[in-house]
Length: 262
Picture (tube, rainbow, N blue to C red):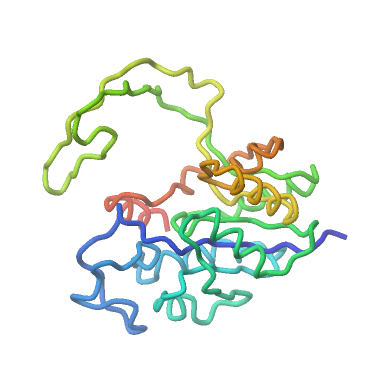
């Protein structure tokens, strides 16, 4: 019999790259005209519901997930309305200043056994298909080892040169205002045959993930996802084919694209 399986959604960030100036007013009071400035992107509406709610509902599609635990900042005033009425869902004000610290706090708050399973999913990936989620869970349980959803890189990849004194290097052009930052210059093309784009959920046993995050924190390593912490700890997470629908909503124009998928 498999151990308990829960999902953690770290949602303590601001997501400033996707802040916009006009959110629709909704009855729950999440946002109204003139109230959207500074609203974290996970509460932006997609087809009338906050993005965070869509992400949680996607996780609830697999009945093997016993609970979804959403970790938010201590001052979050929107989460209660955003998640109202969802089954098997709790939210905890244990979010930290970084993703790794938020996930660590959520693990500690959940009180799991070392061999319980944890799926960590981005609040900004509301398009997670049920078949991709099932594929991840089935693979990890069959292998008794962790893994993550990911997509092979299809485009040609360019490595930007390190240019000193160039304003806006690495920045995305502002398509609404028409302002374009100074362009990066190509240093080289990178072979893409072994490159994958990491997605979420990322699924690991609680004890191993907790230990890997502790180790990464002690070494001040830069952790961008749970798999990177596991890699630093000597593990080799499996790459499970994800879905194009499971892209991360990052830039303002991504909201319109995601609404077409939902």
